[in-house]
Length: 240
Length: 240
Image (cartoon, rainbow over the protein chains, first blue to last red):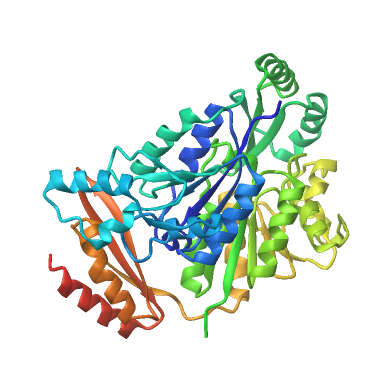
C-alpha cells in the first residue's frame, strides 16, 4: 500500500522577498519521511487572501494531509486563519477555548489581553486547537489541514503535537553512495539498475567540488533487503 | 505601475524527502527583489511528469516570468526538459546547437560524449539556450519560462545570465526596526500606520530569544521618502 501523501503551504512575504530564509520546510520534510508520510508538494505564497485560499483548496483536495506555516500572529498582516475559514466556507470568530488559554496566559504574565492579542483567538468554526507549549497562542486543525505558526521553534513544537495523531506508512529507508565520477558516466548503468528495481527510487544528486564532478546516489524504499541488494550491485559497478 | 511578477518551480525528490536543503529559492528571491521583480509564488514538486507539467502551466499563465530549478542532468530521474516540452505542447530532441557546445567541451576534456551526456542536449523546439559557464550543459528559455540547473553554483550562474535580459520595475527598498516588545503590543499602532501608508508594505516578523519576545518590523516600497516618513513615525511610537 502506498504511503499517505502530504503537502505544505508556507505563507509570508518575508520569504518571497528574500529577507528571511525558511527552515520549516526542511524540518517538516525530515519529520514526515521518518513517519512514513510522503511530502509531495510545497507552495510558498505571499500574504494575500486569494493566493492562500486558492492554494489551500488545491492542496487539500490532492493530498491526504496539508500543513501550513505562518500568518497566525496578532498583526494586520496575519491573515491565515481568516483565509483558511474562507477556503472551507465556514465562519470565524474569537472562540472561548482559545480565548481562555490566552486569557490565563496573559493573567499569569500580568499583561493586558488587548484587541490585537484577541486576534490570535480567532478560530474557524469546527476546527480543533493545536497546542503551543512555547508561546500559548494555538494553531488549529480543520478537515485535513493543520494550521501552524511560522516562528521555527513554535512550528516545530506544533509538528511534534500533530504528528503522533497521523497514520503513517512504512518509514522510508535510504542508503547513499558517493561516486567520484561525472553523472554522464554514471547515468547509463544507473538507469539499468533503476529498471531492475522498480519498487525503489534511485536518485542521482550531482556536485562539483574543487573542479571535480561527482554524484551522491541515493536509493530509497521501504524494503531494506531490496535496498541492500541494489546498493551492493551499485558498489560493484563503480568500485572506489 | 506595479512591478512585473515572477514564480519559481523547484523540481526534485531530494528536497521533499528532507535529504538536502534548497538554497536556490533564497538566492533567486534576493536577486529578483534587487531587480524590481516581485517573486509571488514558489512551488516544490517531485520528479513526476504530471506534477511538473501541471504546476508549470499554472505558474506561467499567472505570472510574467517563471524560473525552474533542477532535473536537467543526464540521469534517468532528470525529466524536466521533456516535461517542459509537454507543458508547451512542442517536440523535443537532441539539438545541434546544444550538441555542438557539449561535443566541444568533451573533446577538450578527452571524455566520451556518450548517450547519457547527449540527454543534456535535448532541448524543446523553439527554445533558446541559457549559457552555463560552470559545466557547459545549457539551460533554456521557452516562452516566459527559464529552465535552469539545480546545482547551486550552476543555478546562480544561469540566473546571472538571464536577469539582465528581463525588464525590471523599481527596485524594492526596505528599512527595518527591531522592537523588543511582544507583537501583541505592537499590533494595534502598526495596523494604524499601515492604514496611513497604503502604498507601503509593512510586515511584522516575530522572534523569541532567551525567553523574551520581540519583532522585526520591515517597511517596504519603491518610494524612499515615504519609507523614511513611516519609519520615523514607527520609531516615535516605540522608543528604544
